[in-house]
Structures are given as C-alpha cells and as structure tokens.
Amino acid sequence: MIILLYDHTWPGMLSAIFEAFDRKLTNCMIRRARAHMPSAFDQDIEVTTNTMKAARVITGLKKKLSADGFHQFYACFLSELHGIEDTLFAYTRLIFSSKDRVEQAFANAAVLRVSQVAKSVHREKHRMEAFVRFRLASDSLFFAEVEPDFNVLPLILNHFEKRYADQRWLIYDMKRNYGIYYDLEKVTEVTLQRTVGVKETAGIFHEEEPLYESLWNDYFKHVNIRERKNTKLHLQHVPRRYWKHLTEKNKL
Image (tube, rainbow, N blue to C red; front, side, top):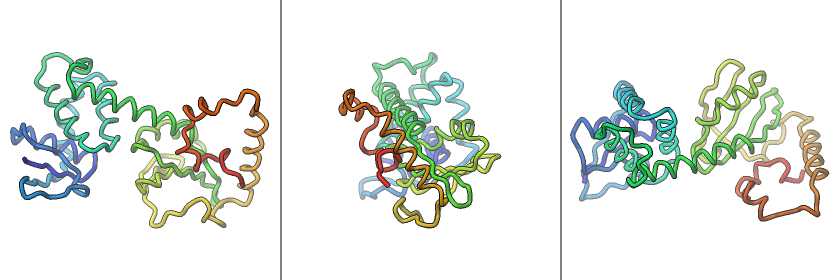
C-alpha cells in the first residue's frame, strides 16, 4: 500500500490529492505525517505542500461542486477524523469521474460520509458561536478559551469578526494549541508559547472582570425557573463537555 504523508494543513492535504492523481494512484491512503506509524509492508511518500497544486485542486472542485458542497468538503477536512482524507480522496475521484454533480448521490459511501461528517462539524461550529465566553484582560484584550471536538476556528472567525468588529479579541483552542486573534483590522492565527488555565491566570485579567462574571452568574441564577427545569433537555443543548469554559457554569 502506498501512503501519502502530508503536513496536516489544508494545502498539504490538497497537495497529496494532486499527487495521487498525478501519479495515477488508485490504491493509496493519505495520512498526516505526525500521526503516522510506519509499516514494513507500506511505501511511504512524503508530499511537499505546494500552494499552486492545492489551488488547482480547489479550482477543479469548485467547478464540480456547489458552494455548499465545497464548504462541506472543507468542513470534513477540519473534522480531523482518522481516515477522513481517504474519504475525501474517494469523493474527489468520484467528482472528477462524473459528468454530473454527485453531492446528492448518497448511495455512494464517500458522499454519505462527507454529508454526515460535515453536519457534525457545522453543529460544533454553531455551538462554539454560542458558547464562547470572553474575559477582559488587563490590556483590554477580550480572551476566550475553547476546546471544540473539531477544528472549527477557521469556520467561526467571520462570525466573531463581524460581531465584535470594535474590540480586540483572541479565541484560543486549548486542545490544538492555536488561536485566532483580531486586532481591529484583520484576523490572524497565533500560537502561545505557554498556555495557562483559567484558574492560573491571576493578574492577567482586568481587575473588574470578577465583578462582571458575578453579575453574569447572578443574571442566569435569577432567570432560571426551578419549576420548569428540564436537565435532560438542557444537556442536549449544552453538553457537559462545554461547561468548564462557560462563565455561568462556574462559581467564583
């Protein structure tokens, strides 16, 4: 089996797909280099990321897919699920071998998988847009920690750039150790040399931040109606895995 290894990036994965087509490979797998375990029975090929080759794949996909279909393709890549690259490669082969659009051909395993994974990623995207809680730092930067199941920061940056256009903010993915920073002009990707948890940040946040958090907690406490409490329904909308970064779920 031929294994195409790429650098974990979107252009890198597209470069691997280009390489597979260029070499006319049909029986191959695409894997992230960092997570790959070599095997004596496989032939590993390291793919160099090439933005021009990646752009050619994107151009081809956009010609054969609707805007929503291409967005689903990208969302699947951001899922980071094991083997999702093979699904996307199989999907790409189907796309380029068919005269008609195939994104609704759910009888095909790759098409169905792309649709299902994209829905899960977009569900996580909407949850992050709702569950991000900013804290005011001492330098007037609004900072938020998140740990989404999927790599959805690239999907939520437009939402926050438009909604908080007059504020400097940083949303940091603690699981993947990178964040998106808005400086009042543009959004850029950043990486912190050392990440710290909320409980270890004394002196970093603005002196009035505890007051705002207290007011926020009091608000949720008073709007809650005990007689209408439905824990099962609440957990469906706000799963426990998000609670550690929700101000209203943490007592000061």
